[in-house]
Picture 1 (cartoon, protein in one colour):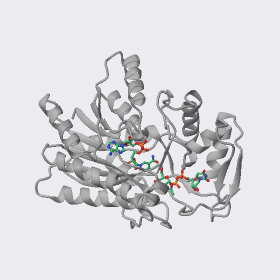
Picture 2 (tube, rainbow, N blue to C red):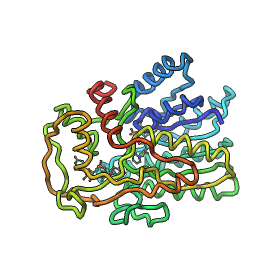
Picture 3 (cartoon, helix red, strand yellow):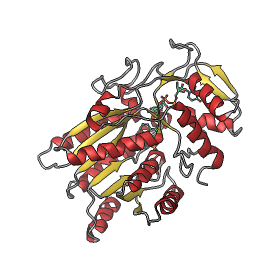
Picture 4 (spheres, rainbow, N blue to C red):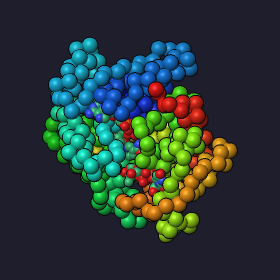
Length: 350
Ligand code: NAD
Ligand code: UD1
């Protein structure tokens, strides 16, 4: 397999995965509307690869909104007319904010589900061997006992999570259909944080972030005054919530291993957790960040946030069994690499 189409490749997880794909020798074709991604991330990847391996990187970009069926179709037709056969698709493109999804559910259904339907409709005409979808641990909903395995019930509690489970279901029916020869993997990510160790690329949230790690970086940088820790009375060892933070480059590697698995095995449809299997409390993450980066963070405890669950971490054994994949980096690496990126790029890609 050589030619990989990456939707949402200019975003956070997509850009890190593109870099890993290029390092492995794949040719990468990115489709992105740039609604939340940056072309600069792709330019930086190109120069990084060129400097490192002294070869021109095979990274190509198409500014396409997947909600637009004809734009999407034309992109595939153009590639085919140039003799480029797309062998696999990694589908990152989508909206990802829980809070926005509650305020604008229709936008979320249209972009996360409608756009995926367009992509699948186009793909049905091209014999693509593998399709990898970015799902989320959010599909498990609240109060699931950790470690959570893939056969746990899925009970999303917000439109964002509902769109993720809807796409998983669509992909399962697509796989079962008589015409399909495409293997499918739905990857349920836990909490990706950090950045590439070179600090060439990283996470570049627009506005005030909802998620913990980018918020920590903005407080460390004194761009935001105070980190509010949501709840100190959860039933955990230190009263703060526990999550499964995973280094972004381990997550990127999980995609490479999935691609290899789908390539070398019989047609299949799999659902996998991508997490470390280790729970880290919010306070542990703050203390580690302070220690490894020698920075004091200004934080204080406030009330619990609506819709939070106290403990959530993965059972990652199925990914280990099928893919031979396991997260290698720890929270020290995540805090070091994440802060290094932020410190060197306080305005992100701008
Ligand atoms: P991101 O917003 O950084 O990247 C998404 C990319 O998709 C952006 O570059 C955006 O411009 C593009 N995009 C959005 N809608 C598009 C459309 N209609 N057509 C073309 N491009 C479009 O997000 P991310 O953090 O990289 O997440 C990638 C995927 O992983 C998303 O589907 C997200 O729901 C899922 N996910 C993310 C996390 C996380 O913590 N970051 C956790 C679980 C799942
Ligand atoms: C969030 C999303 C989830 C997504 C996941 C991974 C919500 C409700 N859920 O989950 O859908 O799959 O990210 O990207 O947004 N915290 C603070 N102060 C802050 C921010 C967060 O104390 O300023 C706490 C939260 O209460 C939580 C933990 O830090 O306990 C992690 O929060 P966050 O980064 O938003 O991730 P999740 O809640 O796990």
